[in-house]
Length: 448
Image (cartoon, rainbow, N blue to C red; front, top):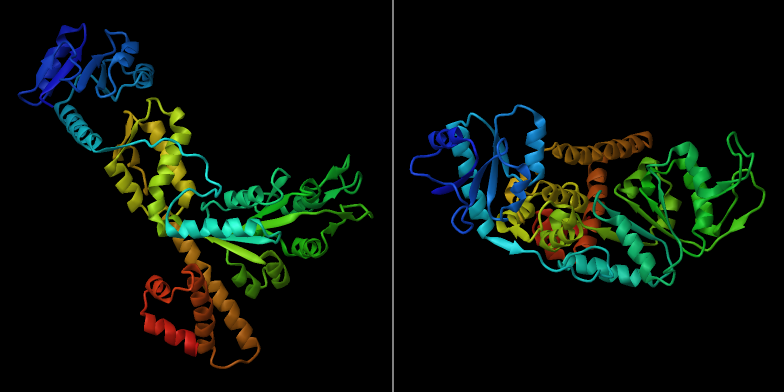
């Protein structure tokens, strides 16, 4: 920056700043908005609240001799881009000015914030072909009063899909009850689900309706259904077969009319083979299914999602948010998003909280990907080993032969079936996702 402005009543600060600035930089004592982008502001001799009076494209660097946290926090609250302690150090000032130059250059290539579109009937925002197919399937299944199992990684929006099914169905306006199978302690889950009579156990000082009764005529959504303990799975199976149940401590059977929706980020088929999930319950829950693909498989949806979250949370920013830079979007598109839409939403909220100007830049994304998210991927692959060992142990107990070939056949069968379904039976796309040739895939499908 060839020109900067200085606001102070301390004559010694101008000399101190001159010595710290790169040679040739002019210091102006007034602030012509069109000429000066950087203003050094002395909060020791000037009213800190005046920082608010500077334009959005002027970066205010507050300077102070004070060693207390109070002035620093006050200056940042009023909108200072940075706060520097005196005496000013040449290297620190040079580094800051270089950062501001890069910051200004990035903002010149900005994307305006699009107006908030009307809420879509399908809860997941996006326009990729994959999501279009998900929404079409969702709309069809909403019209059929059958159980739906929603699968997908953590953070992909499974509960929103369930809510959309309920809203688009004939049960719109009726109760939508969420049962988080992972959050409710096992010893309380049965009473929460079926209710109980007064005096049925210690602490039951009054009767209480269960979630299934509350959901009557509407929908009940079992989130993380894979976490249900086996004893409760048997009782839930009976309910699914008859739509009746007994509250704890009661001899009076209750009948309800409830549509059951469920979701899981686990492979229930594998859990069935391991004996951790009842096969009959699995088939009852998965009469129809919807798979929500991870965000890394539909990167075209990141832009509309960013626009959506910015419109939703822009009121939380210190500045009136006008948009974001192309580099900001490029960084988001390049990230792998192990936490999926939930991680993207939290990233946008964090960027808004940290924003120093009306445009979000890569400076607000410095911590993106710095957390130990890779461990989650490792954990996912580790689930494969117990499944294989369980299968092998069963085969050994039955004195089976050719176990190696049988393991490969079972894995291939499940893998190809899942990927082909995901690729909508397009063998070329399935082969691309698997990293094999189409000819190899066809041979595998024919010969097993």
